[in-house]
Image (tube, rainbow, N blue to C red; front, side):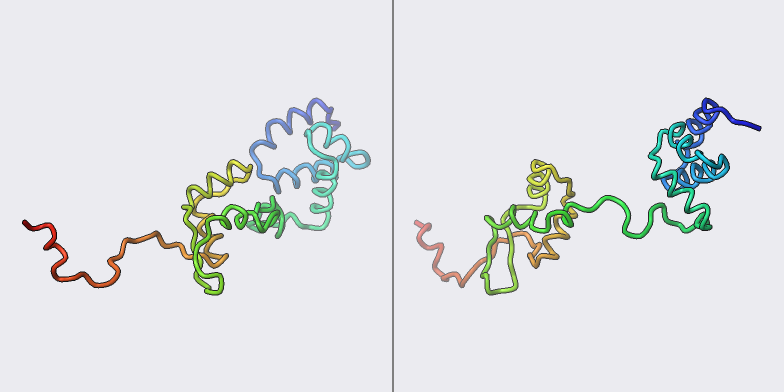
Length: 164
């Protein structure tokens, strides 16, 4: 039985949207192996995928890597976080507003995690206020809000000046 490129295109347009990244790679790899010589090129064209992805899928099927692993991507795969790309990203935003003794391990900032998150978004990075809080904690910042405190003792006759 011979399959036309139009038939493969229709097959992939129905099946591939239903699969995750790993499953798509394995399906196109198995199909390319089935077609034999020239299979990866035909499958890449009809599935609208990169030829290198089809070849990777072919290798995974050939090595028996098609067993369920519970993971979609390999360990370490995926997009790198903004912090990994630019570790000093948050330092640049926090440094002007940092308070506390530089010799003391306790530091804090006057900016909230929400305002820092918005400032990162303006620079083109997405970070939730929760993530900003975790990053500040990792950098040694105190995540406590300011609190009014009565400092010192009050004189007993303090209010006497207001009595007539």
